[in-house]
Image 1 (tube, helix red, strand yellow):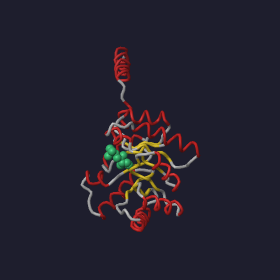
Image 2: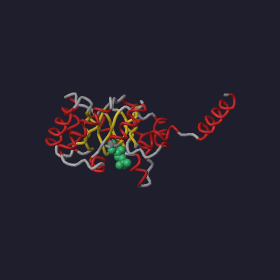
Image 3: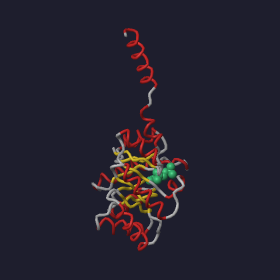
Amino acid sequence: MKFFIDTANLDQIKEAQELGILDGVTTNPSLMAKEGITGRDNIINHYKAICEIVDGDVSAEVIATDFEGIVKEGEELAALHSQIVVKVPMIKDGVKAIKYFSDKGIKTNCTLVFSVGQALLAAKAGATYVSPFIGRLDDISTDGLNLINDIRLVYDNYAFETQILAASVRHTMHVIDCARIGADVMTGPLSSIVGLLKHPLTDIGLEKFLADYRKGN
Ligand code: E4P
């Protein structure tokens, strides 16, 4: 299972990278705005800075919503760095653009996916990744993990190569449940990754080991 961090915060990206378990980064316009990164040039420079920190795929989202605009913007983003994955929304022109990028060997991440039908279309178009947003489904009293389960079933039925990127992960149990289901990737905040470290018995056990060591030394 690949671990992506879902942030545009460089310090948090560095922290996850230094842990040695980071496989990539996802961003979106809201995450950029949260870090105060606005304006085309600043956003482009920020993508480049992220690519310098991590070794894996970095999703960069297009703003255009028409086919020609998505293709133009996506090709510019892809040309920035070999690690860039063009993030395209699940809309009609987005599906067309994913097929176009796929034919050209440009990696894509189909974002804002909330149904199995959408995920099927993304795979048919040749998306590298499909991003079902589990947290946002949970927010509206719909089980997001069911969607991951259903997409896994459908993709396995036909051996689709599109990787299921469980997105909008909010906490550690989302990560663990996605791993149980067999999501290929998860993307979440730093807390959902480092939170996996924690267990009170680890802390108690370590404290006891160290105390016993100190007794004899
Ligand atoms: C996916 O790539 C999105 O950036 C993200 O996971 C959205 O998460 P949110 O619902 O917590 O905003």
